[in-house]
Length: 124
Image (cartoon, rainbow, N blue to C red; front, side, top):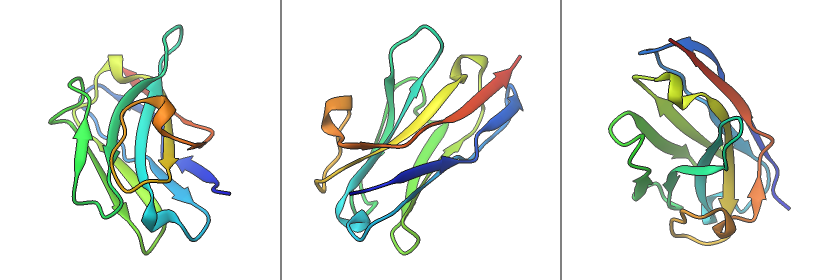
């Protein structure tokens, strides 16, 4: 069983930065690839970024490429999402997710555990 707890969301003006984090329980964190997804009001949940088990490989949605950076600290069982140059269209609930494989996944069905989400609101 894996529990994921996100924190670090909030309200920021356009152009600002936030760094949500996701703390994982359990001893298998370093064997799991991790991902971030987001869901805006009235829209489906969409892929944002993913990182492999060691952190040496990352992948981003085109909409956030060059602005967001995913990273992980296996010693702390934590994954981060550094979000820079935020835009109003980035407003959403951000979820982290975990999959019991080493490699990256980009679909919701690739992941087997989910956090409860953290709200990110970007004002114009």
